[in-house]
Image 1: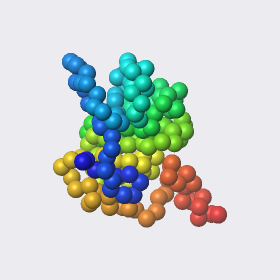
Image 2: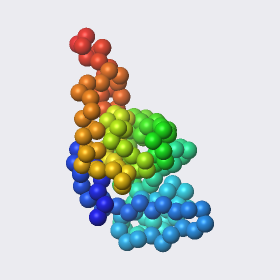
Image 3: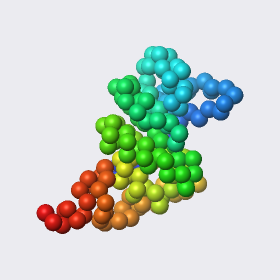
Length: 166
């Protein structure tokens, strides 16, 4: 079984991420699934009728506010990072947590590496599907890269200069 980092621990991944190409939609496996936003929108009724947990993954070009009215139907939102250098997913994560109030699991998927985990956490991610060719137990150390943060964000909204002044 695949592993993910959830919170501050390595755990079994009980979800199946369904990645489809443009030619055909694969048959969904039994159990909890994470589908693309496009598939969720096209097959919402059938997905909800399955009686399992549903998650949606967003591409960097997807608008996260589309999901706000669907929060009650979703157990997980994943954000795809197709390349290490593509940071649009950080903004999506911050918007989901900070502006739209998503309280459930927020998972980083795709080209997820140890060097990024601390910064994913800063903008609200709490689950990480580390790239398969990397050691997930070693990657876990990335959550502790820094002992202090200067700027405010989701994990520490008060900037350091204000905390010191208090």
